[in-house]
Every structure is written in C-alpha cells, then in structure tokens.
Length: 530
Image (tube, rainbow, N blue to C red; front, side, top):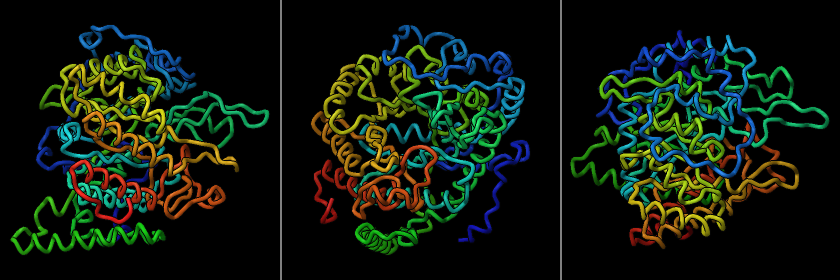
C-alpha cells in the first residue's frame, strides 16, 4: 500500500468550488455506484436564505414535555425548506445574514458528498440488522475539529473500527454494518446557550462548523464561512475513507497488520492477535478450496458515514433530488439522526427528516414516553420499511432496564420495524474529582449488558452499538482492562466536547459484544474472559 504521505488531500480551508467532484466509486456497495448524481430542483431554491436565517434562532433548552404532532403530519406537503415553518431548537444566531446566505448558496452549488444509491444500500443493510441478521457498528468522534484534521487521525479511527468489525464478525458470526461518525460530525447541541467562566459569560461553543472553542467574544461569534470549511473537510475525509475502504487497506489478509503502535494493553492485543491468527487460518482454508483473497468482498469493505442532523440550514443546502427515483436525499451523509434535544414531534428537525429518503436515527432517553416513540415512527417511517428508522437508546444501565422494555413493547404492539441500537456513552457522563468530564468504562459496559439482557428477555433483536471513540491514544474515559484512572485523565485529554473511548477500550467492548452475540446464537465464548 502506498504511504499515507503520498495521499493528496484537499486543503481544509479550500473553497468547495475548488474541490473536484468525488469519483463515483462508491464508499459503500459497488452494486449501487451506477446511480445518477442527485440534482437540485429549481423549486428548492425558491426559499430565500435571507428569510431562512431569522427562523433559526432557538438556542435554549426545549421543554421536557414534547408536544403531540398532528396524526396527518406525514401527509402534509414537504419541501427541503418546510422545516422553516416550525420551531427549530439548538440553532445559532448568525449576526451577518448576508454572509450566511452567501455561504449557503455556495454549498448549494457544491457536489453531493454521498450518493443516493449508497444510502439505499445502507438502508438495506440496516434492515437486516433490524431482523437480527446483521449488527450495526457505528462509531467515531464526539465532534470533529479543524485542528485535529490529519490523515493519520482518520486512518487510526478507521483502523480501530475495522478491528472491532473483525472481532464482531468472526466472534459473533454475523455481518457487521460499519458506519463512522465521520466526515460531518461537527455541530453539537448545548444544554445552555451561554458558558460562564468567573464573571464572564459568552455564547457556548457549538462545534467547529459554527464557532470557535477559544473563550473569547470574537471566537464565539457564529461564522458562516465555517460551514464552507466543514464541507471541504468532510469532502477530504470522504476521499481518504474511500481510498482506505476500496484500495486494499481493508483487505481481510491484512487483519494481522491492523495493529496500532501504541496498543499497550497486552490483554486486548493478545486477544486480537489470537483472533487474527484464526482468521489467517480460515483464509488459508478458503484459498485451498479455490476461494482466493482476490475476490472483491475480501479486498474491500462497505463503509458509510453519519452525523447528527442538527444545523438545518447546512442540511437543507446539501439536499438534492435523486434523478433515478425522484426522491430527496440529504447528501451530507449516508445516515443522519435527530438528537434527544431536538426530537420534538412538531419541531423543525422532525419536519426536515420526514422528507428525506436517507436511513434515519432518533436518540431516545428514559424521558421519552412509549406513545411518542410510536408517533415518531409513524411520522418518519410511514411505510414501515425495515432499515429506514434506527432507535438509538441512551439511558444509563439501571434506567435502561426500567424504561426500555415499555418502549420495545409499544413498538412491537404496533407491528413497527426499527433497528434497536445501544448508545452506552451519553447516559454515563460524570464529572471527575479533578474537574474533567469523563465516563466510566464499567458503566458503559453495564449499559450494554442491560441492553442485551432486555432484548433477550423480550425475544427481540439487539441491532447495534453507537460509540464515541477514537483511534488516538487518549485518556478521556476511566476504567478498562488497562485501567485509566482519574489522575490519568490529564495526560492525553484531547476531546473538544465529550470524552471518547480509546482504541484499547473500544476493542475490549467489541470482544464483550461478540460474546453476547455468540450467546444469542447458542455458542460458547471464544475467549476465556468476556
């Protein structure tokens, strides 16, 4: 494989107009790459960006009680800009409306970042996960940043996801759907629109595509040109991911070479080396049977991108009509989800999502009433298509055991098909004695176990896991077999937002999940510990 130094990337600060259109070599399934590029409908441009901007000023925390949506909501006319008639939470207020309009118009002229056929391929795979025939592995940064944008960082996170997928595929003996929180995961919702340090209060940092993290008045002003820079970085990230996924780096024969140089956890490294050896033996057997490593499925992998659908003007600007189906797709990512703070049934985010044909996710906490979940399923997936809607559960272990059964049972009673996914990160954030925001690995593991236990008891399918993790050697979450302590947090605490699992902790979780998947198939553990 060519050296990473030989990979040419567009500069992060380049104008999108200078970025060549991504080659139609699908990052996802090759059987879907012959799709025509999505095109913009002239009617989609009718809405003035000058009118759009003032409707985006809803930064405060929404009420916990979610208003009911009209039962006919799914039948109402939809357009990429119809969300502007609804209340939009967690949107920044741009002081320069003309600059915002110019940036959005520039994004409308840019090529799509992903293709409609790829999104349809992902929906098909997620449908398999909903039926217990596949498992979703979704992971990546809490929030991507401009400063940490380097080829090595992208490669290392991709490599850890590959390692985890091999553990889950070989150990769990089922296909793994690989989705990165990458190439667009910039914006973050905030619990408070203002941040106070001492006597100074400034607007909260909302992600690099909106404002800066430096605690200065100038840095915290929302800058529309950051939207353009975020698009540019997402395009470059996708270019590199496509090269890794289809250019031989992800070949199965390289399983034993996907080691990270800093992997100091001897237990996880030993487990992985043992698994890699077994995979090599299996490949040798297949070669002897005439199934060589040159088969396309052995040389490349399907890899998809995702992010939270939060900043609606950006999402609208990258929404296109697919010329082969006539459907609208949000071409900023293959998969987009709505968060806990923006899932109001009558809100702008649900309104936008109901009209795009991408596979969608909804984050669900213990605060969601079962009937509200049923209602949002009807709004976002009125045809009840498997793979269209993924429910990402984030509660904490004890609350999950108490609240998840009622949600699952309500969905089952309605005959609705969703992909159930565990997010064991967001319900387990704590403040360390030394002031760092962190997460305890034991709590993360406990929530995952509770998630599997509930589905086992109800006879339903645990469809996947959603993690904030990185390929970097960080010390942000405490615990794990190579235990990170509170005192260790300051050593390599690099996150711009929430704490992430490091490579060792991520791999340890993958082994635990693989054992639960094996247990669900009536098979014994492959490892002494799990």
